[in-house]
Amino acid sequence: MIELVPADLVRVQDRELLQRLAVSGTLKATQSAFIKARVAGELQDLQLREGDMVRAGQIVARVDATDAQARLRQAQQQAAAARSQVEIAQRSYDNNRTLVEKGFISKFALDSSSASLATAQATYQAAVAGVDVLSKQLQDTVLRAPISGQVAQRLAQNGERIGVDGRVLELVDIRQLELEASLAAADSPLLRLGQTAELQIEGAGRPVRAKVVRINPTVVAGSRAVLAYLALEPTEGLRQGLFAQGTLVVGSRTSPSIPVSAVRNDRPRPYVQIVRDNKVVHQNVDVGAQGEFDGQWMVAIDGLPAG
Image (cartoon, rainbow, N blue to C red; front, top):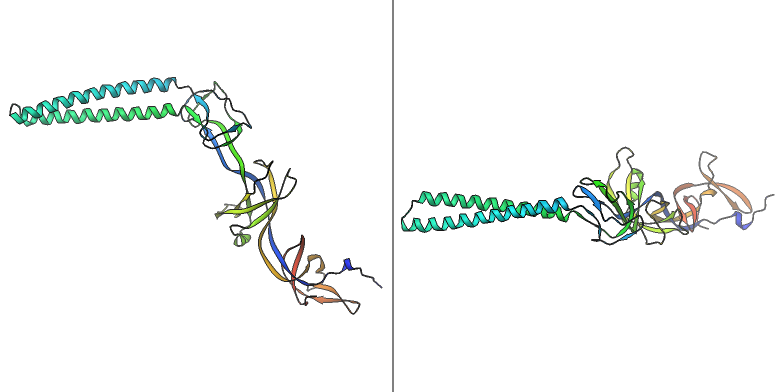
């Protein structure tokens, strides 16, 4: 004779089962940037180091501007000379036009002075454009932070000669982090914007909530995985690069259900053991979708009434 205690029994009840997908990945900052040199030269005035706070627009370093300043002065002098030529050509044209009107010279001379004036004006406009280009290059010797955040990497040192697009600093804004989760293509139809997840992050004392904010419209070549991006709620102590794993709620279903462990599969059809008239009876059932209820993994079944 077997004596059963209440802990050995569970009633079939209608329960709302939450369907979940396992997700995992590395945390990334939604805002990050590399500060690169836009002109070649010797790096100067770089004082920031890893962990320092930076404001958007803040000057973080400079590239030696001696050459850029000299080229700009040269271009400005060339533009001034071209402007003088325009003034001379303009006076010549005005004089010739007056003489043509009085009949003292032919119209051919006026056409010639008009062409000279157009050439001088074009030369001056080209010189002005050259000044604008070199002014921009001089401005580019000052390196500014494109975003607010913290220095993650210092990639160059003062006195080092860096080339165009040479990396100087990496900035990250950890105030908003997200998880890039890779999901199987078969699970992608279950994904929806706004779905929530609970993540366990290494070093975090409690689970962190996250929400699906973007779904990649293409699959990853090779793995055929679909990427979903989950924004984390602001939590103190999180860092870019930490590993996170958890479950994403993708739906729910209310149906008669029992714990998964109560279903036996050592026969051709799944069955459960029920207590009827103080006897244990085997009853075949049809199992449905699985889900979570009150922290326990349950399975929907057909073939048994509630209770």
